[in-house]
Image (cartoon, rainbow, N blue to C red; front, side, top):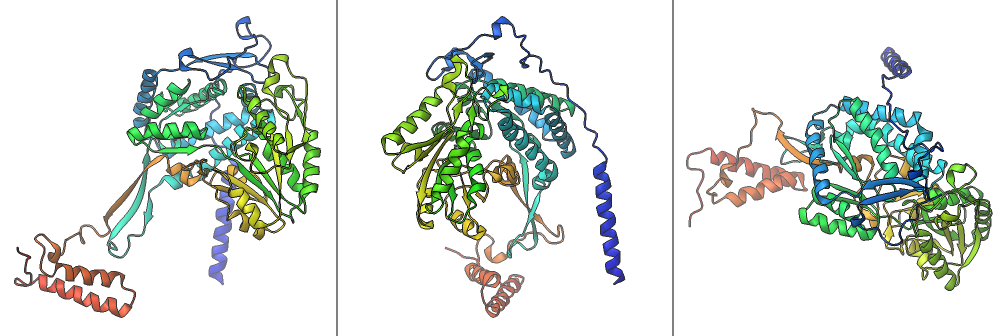
Length: 576
């Protein structure tokens, strides 16, 4: 009894010490990042204050400039150069040189970099969200959820567990190699800074303005810990710039459309560099007959309207059991009708603008196709005070009912604030419907019984699943993120995503060196002895036989062969 009291006291003392250490604030310096040129203080020069009307159609590399503007107001923000192939090669070369230095850095130095970054983000949430809002059209709340919370969660997870999962991992050596020590080492590959890599990021032409400001923050944090220059770089441009990066990098991680993903794979095949692709989705949101409809309705609307529906992990297909279908549609329609759409920084509206030019036209064409095939619009949100030049950048949140899988709205990725709701009768039916898609990123299943929800979710072919929640897997940074089918392959985040940014190297060494070393038995040394195969036969049965008596008998034969080898006349060689 006294022993257990001692263990309890020691455990309490340890916990108390850990708690007291938590009370000591870490020594993390503050960053000073110049944001004077990105603040909308009403004193912009004439050059940067006009309304920008972008040309219709895809912008070509020949324009040499990535023009940036606010989707919600069409105010001009500036431009960044569209880098050429040679310029991209030079940027990658500089990052590769810097990486060789950073690869030798300690985890302590890397953790300090993350702490400095985390401190800046927490202290400058409003600035970061305002910049995101101006560049992409999303509301401040959506920017906080998408940019701030997810990034802080990722950094916190890396601080707590990153080093653990990048240290050598020891594995079992099996029966034949019992005298060996086996491990897996994770060496920098060129993608994630915490793994010891260098990074070159080609930001989307639709978010270059905000991406380049965030780059300043990263640069300042790296400089604060003495990291080499050019370890992280951001490049801007169009297709040619992205293609040049694919041809120059050591590992590609891409988020975008299946069409571009296929082109990246083709280019990467020329140099056989590894590729991770996250290519969007058409996620199913399933509501069973025993779900709490009033609770699920709010989650469903958030799942569809987050960032104006421009969320690769957003819900795009809603399947609701016939018993609760009417109730669910009524509650969702009521919420959507209350949603107002307008310029996000005014602080008056629930939903912001569509980031990509002409995308509203695509959204309307999907709705029109559904209406032509028998669907109905059940509810729509309302517009606020929109600027005349920005009307085309907004799309009202829309609930569409009486849909089916013949409609493009249920097959193509919408990437917008549309909620198509379809009725189902049985579990078998909804599983078949959910799997009837070329995409396979994620799904969400809601039921009053967790067991019931898990049974359905386990039969849906996708990479991520949330039970009685939406996108919770996205916030659990210990989990990998990615899909199957046209949603891509490979994984971001989590242990798998972290290690995917490494060269995974298998290492085997002698466990009792130099006392026990590898020596090939004489029976199978060159030239092979006549009884070489008989020796192998007995060895295999001794190691892997299912019956212990057969294994012992085989072991006796192995020892017999080995003893014969030690006699001068014990081995006869094979001869022609």
